[in-house]
Structure formats: C-alpha cells, structure tokens
Length: 326
Image (cartoon, one colour):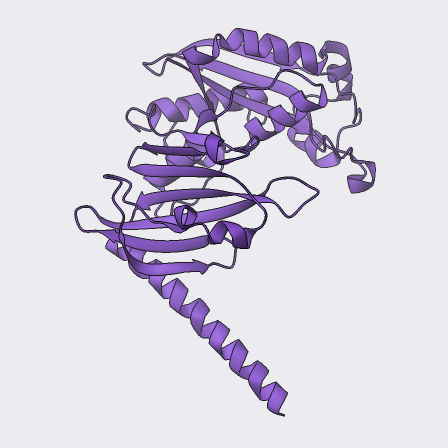
C-alpha cells in the first residue's frame, strides 16, 4: 500500500462573491504530491501548474503567499483536466494507495473542480488519512488542529523548501507522517463526504481504530434523523454493544450534537453527530456520527458543557416568561 500525500493551491474571484462561479468558487491552480511507500519513504514526486480558466487574475491574498504569478501560470500551466488526469494516472490503481492530506479541504476542492469539468468521479466511499487530525490527536492536549508549518517546527523537521507551494507542502506533510511516530496509519482513516449515501442501503458503518464511523443516507429533515433510533444509538466502539446512556443528546453552540454512553467492559463512549445538507435546494440532510472512547476527564468536560448550556437555556426561558408577565 502506497500513500499519495497531496496538496493543492487554488484561486478565487479577485472581486469577491460578485464574480464567483456558483459551481466552482475555488479554482485549482497547482497540484503537488509525493508518493510514500509502506515504510513511509518518499519514492516519487508530482507537480503540475494549471492555467486558470475562470479566475485568470490572482486574488490579492493568494498572490501574496505564492512564489509564482499569473505570467508563470499562463506560460507553464496546463488545463485542469489534463493535469488531474495525469495526477490520477501517476497515483496508480485506486486499490494500491490511500490519499493523505493536511486537513479535509483538498479532497473536497479536487472533486469540485473535477465535477465542473465533468470528469469521472473518484471511488465511493472514499477513505483518506487526515494527517492534520492524526497529528492533533497525538500532539495537542485538546486535539485542536495546527498549521503545517507549526507541526514541522515542533517535530524539528528541517525546512528545506518554501511553504505554500503545493508539492512542498505535500513533502512536509509526508515528513510529518514519517517523523510523527503515529504507528500504522492504515486503520486511522476517515471518510470524505463530498459524496454521501443516498439511502439506507448505501449507509457507511465501520468499526476501525477504536472508532465507529456512521454516515447515514438522506432524511427529509434534521428532526426526522433524530427520530431514527439507529442514528441516536450510542454503541461501544470496541465491542459494538449498546451502552447505558450517561449524557443524553444535547446540541453544542457549533450545531454538533453530543451524547455519552457507558460500556461496562470498555468504559465511556463519546458520540458526536453532525448534519450536512443533502443538496442546495431542499431541507434534506444526512448525518455523520462518530463514536470514540473518552477519558473520565473528557467526560467531565462534556458534562460541564452540557450543564452550562442547560443553565443558560433555563435562564433565557425565565427571562422570557418574566417579560410576558410584565
């Protein structure tokens, strides 16, 4: 199994939303990648500059961070369809590699651009390793994500190349992967949700790396999803048994729902539930549920958060009642 560690640079409308194409707000202008073997050794590199079609003028912020400009893109760039086709051919057969990225955005924008040019879709369901999240879970206390440059400096990786060039950022991501001592990452994958299941038959439910990933089919609304006992169940991510509920589902300020259950063999399990729109033109949603083991300290943090939100809701309700009486 090889790992294709890739990074993209993209441009956007230099005049903001007024000049934005609704099907492709971010246009890829560079694909950079390194191929890594199962010993985490870099065995090949790939780079293509892409001549922009929608936004030929670079956005000011984009121009400031890149080491090239419009002239170089026009002179050395190729069309996106050609660049992407060559990239996927360079990757090899889909069953011979796994994508790795620093964060989930690159795969999303790659597929957005592929859809714009009506290219053949990537395999579904699509697994990939988010090295940014894998790094966060090992090296940050609250699992908060870090910029690539910060991770490179923390691991004392020599900065031999300038950042903000796609192939160089792919190279540094691969170096973090090799130097981070994460162990075998083949089971630490996550699922890309640019494409999602449409119905129960296509649902994704996988147990791996002491995690349960559940990506549902579509529901008419968020309320319909929450009425599904399978969506709101909290199972043990190690043995699959149903847990005893310790904290019922509550919605955090970021819109994510949380619950905690206890497996009497394997301890507390934290479930998170996010809802994504199934399309731009309806209220239909699909659910992304993740269940992971949680420490006693983290359990107390979640409970304190739930209690604080509940207290604020009660206070708001009492103020509303007083206002009605007054």
